[in-house]
Image (cartoon, rainbow, N blue to C red):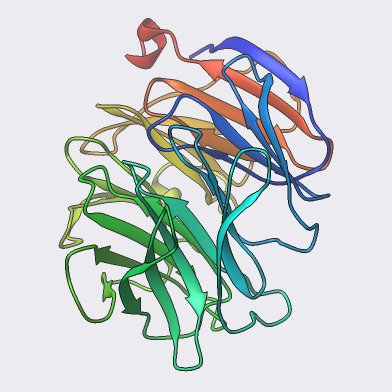
Length: 314
């Protein structure tokens, strides 16, 4: 499949680059602390400065009304000029550890992973004033995490890394009480949740399979092992993947190859054939058939689109 290059830009060196669930924009976090909201021409729509040492997972609301920021000792909501709306302190993250946050799909709440004296906890804050609406303790301390709002508007998915080099997947429901519910498996990363079906896509932490899980019980729908696909024993699935549409997944290998798989059986369909050998260390996939490749060191970012004929592998 030969993709269409839609846009490209050069940004400062990057700490992270993400899609914004529920919006046709992208969020770049530069190494010097700026949050950049980009449109599909990769032009900067909004720019918010954060302290450079705030290396947690930050987010922007889908209606671009506020930024949710995860600091070393607090969670903050900021307006799009960088003015603080509210701030809620928590216990300090240790060196090279961080929390994360994400806006709910209706922009009325902020989910965050925070550290308390008792346990690392997934917390739901009211987006307007920071009132705590839900707390769900996690069963083990985390070193890093990522939050994905479930398209059902009720759950949030938590991908949590731990000091034992395991990655665990949790689901938290806004209306429940008690701790976060862990899904089976300790070496996989929750990377995307499909609208409509609620299928959850996980990538391996190590040499495991790419997998689709049912929501919300976590049962395995399909799994694809790297050694059944790649001839080189050292080539495995990378962290990066996502739903490219209702019936396709795009996933990266450790050799920066990008493979399209069918849903729900994860049958390999085609490989993306890029026009050059530029670095594609990062892959960020969106449900409308577009994706971004990025080189964090140089700040080079490219936006691609899959033609329908290529999507079908014809």
